[in-house]
Amino acid sequence: MSIESPYPPVQIPSASVYDYLFADLDPTVADQIALVDAPTGNTISYRQLVQRIDAFAGALAARGLGPGDVVGLLAPNSSAFAVAFHGILRSGATATTINALFTAKDIAKQLTDSRATLLITVTALRAQAVEGAARAGLAESAVIVLDGPGAATDGHPNADDLLGAGHPAPRVSFDPATHLAVLPYSSGTTGNPKGVMLTHRNLVSNVAQIRPLQSMTADDVVLAVLPFFHIYGMTVLLNAALHARARLVIMPAFDLTDFLTNIAEHSCTHVFIAPPVAVALAKHPMVDRFDLSSLRAIMSGAAPLDEELGSAVTARLGCALVQGYGMSELSPVSHVTPFDRGRALVGAAAPVSSCGWTVPNSESKLIDPVTGEEIGLPETGLSETGELWFRGPNVMVGYLNNEVATRETIDADGFLHTGDLARIDSTGCVFIVDRLKELIKYKGYQVPPAELEAVLLAHPAIADAAVVGVTEPESGEEVPKAFVVRQPDAEVDEAAVMAFVAEQVAPYKKVRQVAFIDAIPKSAAGKILRKDLRSR
Image (cartoon, rainbow, N blue to C red; front, side, top):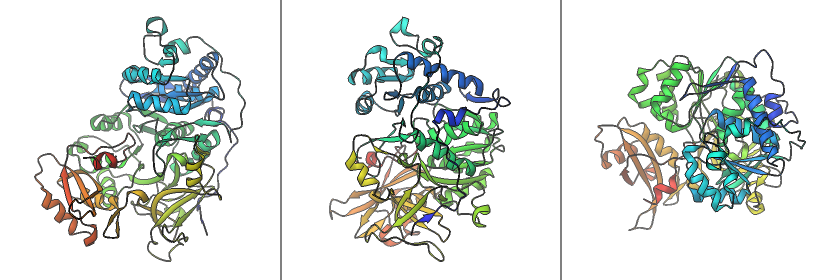
C-alpha cells in the first residue's frame, strides 16, 4: 500500500515552462522588480525579463536552433543566466546546465554526451569553456560569452550581439509532456553522471506541486544563492519564485558576509540553503552583527539536516526552518515541509529533522532493502528503515541514452527508487536516514554517516564534519572515519572527538578514526563529496 500525498491535489496545466511562468503576466505587476544582481545592484523588472527572454529566444532561432537542439549553459547565478536559460527553453531547444566548477575535460564530456551544438558562458569561465567546447568539436563562434567584448573583437558573440539584433521570438509547437526542457547531469542512485531527461511537464508539475506549500507571494524577497545550474536552484528558486512574482536577489556564489549583508540590506523574507549554510548560521559569531529580522522562513535541502542543528538556527534567528527532499530525477522536489511545519495539515508541528510529506498528485513507498517488503505506517513513533520510492508527474522520462540505468531506477509501475533510506511516522512524514550506498557496514551493523555527522556538529569546538567508511589495514574491516574542521582557536584532539561521539551512540556506531582538515569538500549544492575524502 503506497503512501498518498496528504496535500490537496493541484492543477497541472499542459503548458511549456515559458507559458506557465509568463503567459499570464498581470500588467499590474509587470513593472515590479523580478531580479536583482546583488554584486552590482542592477535590477530587471518582470516586463524587461520577458522582453529579454523573447529576444534571446529569437536570437537562438535566427542561428537555426530550436526543438531537437541542445544548448549548454555554463555560468554562475546572475540575471543573465535567467535570461539565457529561459531563452533556450522559449526557443524550443533543450538546456543542459553545467556545473560552474567543472574543468574543461568535464565540460567537454557533458557537451559531447548531450550532443550540445552551442555553449553559453561568462568571462570568468571563458578559458575552460573554450577549451571544453573545442574538445567537444564546437566552433569558436559556437561559444557565446555573455559579458565578453563581442564577436567583432574575439569571435565569441556576447549578450548584446544576441539581444541587440532584435529578432522576434519564434513560434514553436511541441508536446510539453514529451519535449525535453532540461538535461542536468546527476550521478543518480549510483555511478557516473548521467543526463537526466526532464520535460516541460516535469518542471511545470514540480512548480505547481510546491507553490501552495511555499506561501510565497509577490511581496516576498528571496535570496538566491543556491546555483541555478543545479536542479534545486533551478526549480525551487528560479522557476517557483518567478511564478510567485517574488523578487529574487541573486548571489553568484556563497560568501557568509555577503549572504548576511544581502538579507539585511534587501530585507529578504525567504532563504533556501543547504546544510553547510545552516552550520554557519548556527555557529558563526558574525551572524549576530546583522539585522536578519525580515526573515520569515528558511528551507534546507540537498542533504539531511539534524534536529539539533536546525533547532539551533531557529532559536538564533527566530524564524521557521524546514526541510525538503528531492533529487534531479524528480525535478527535484518529492517531499516538503510547509513553513507552518504541518500544523494546518496534520494538527501538529513536524520535527525539524523531517523532510515533510509527499508533494501533491504523488505517492511514496518505503521498501525493506533486504526483503523487498513494503513498510507500513507505524501506529506510533517511527517505522523501520527502508528505501524511499516515489511516483508522480515530476519523475524524469529517464536517463539520456541509458535504458539500463533507467530501468534500474524506475520500475514497471512508475516508481522511482531513490537509493535513499528513510523512516516514516504515522502521518506519512518522512525522515531521511542516509544514502543506501553510503551506509558503513561495521561488523555487520549498518552505520549511517549522517547520524554521526549530526553528533559531531553538536560539539562546540567543531565547525564542520563529515564521516566516511574506510578500511582498517589490520583487520580489513570497514570503520567510520571522521574528518573534522575545528572552530577557530579550538584545541580539541582526536581522542576528545572519539570520546564525545562514543558517549552518544551505540558501541558499533563509534568513530574509530579522526582526521583534522581545513575544509570539508562539498558540491555546489552543498552535498559532501565523500569520494574525495575516501581518497585521502
